[in-house]
Length: 191
Image (tube, rainbow, N blue to C red; front, side):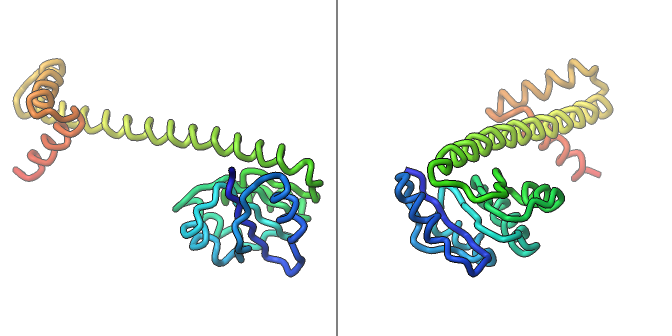
């Protein structure tokens, strides 16, 4: 059962939205958060989904959403009456997964939430792949730098330098990139 946190920056009551989601079987967190408290409430309550109901998302709301997404990313569905394209882009950049510009009937809430969840999961997989690729690239750069150091200092060919790194990694039972870091650190400390 999905745990949902409602957030609002308006004075209008959102009890109808809360009731509609509860009728659909979602676990509604008891508190309705204000945007300025969003990161703390998400950290404390750990909702599965955040739904923001707003007339027009303020800069403060978007900033708090960005802070939340840095620390604890969640699927975020935003209902707003503002269809300004720049504002929508800013909301998506801040971490909004789905942005709805019209009120949605209760029977449409479940599919909208499912789309937001699927999109968030897809983006999360892409973020993980990107992070992995960036790590691998940094490791490759470190290994190449260590090979160059071994080639210069020990007058080894590139293949021999790589074989030396590989052998040291195997002997130490660590990853090749870790041995490469150690070679670079040793070279820097001997200067």
